[in-house]
Length: 157
Image (cartoon, rainbow, N blue to C red; front, side, top):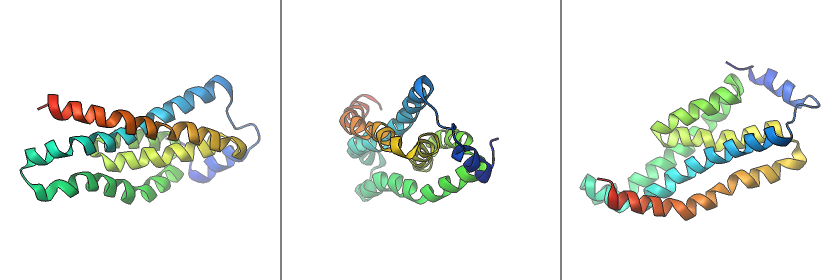
């Protein structure tokens, strides 16, 4: 596993612990992809929701299909933050990616940990730029998620 939270914080606060160049680009690309996956989870389901409810055979479930995902994301955010302090960022983001199989729980870890990792590896003056880059994937997900959801609803049985 990784260093404990206090050890990780000390190493990050040391001068020269921030990354630059190609390594920074690779990390930001991976983090952006993680956020995109989490964002697509919500936007795809929203479009496919009428088909999902029809398959379930209950109009009462309409509100809960999408809301349950967002509820799980919100409820799990503080847990992921604490786990990343205890087990380290790398292990926890891998765990949250695996947790996407439980949809909202894993996605909340991805959303939160991307911002925590950016805060860990970039100086304060550069954080907004990199958080803007990673969070731009929400706009991409809003554009392509409904198209993918519609295709799933029409073509996948």
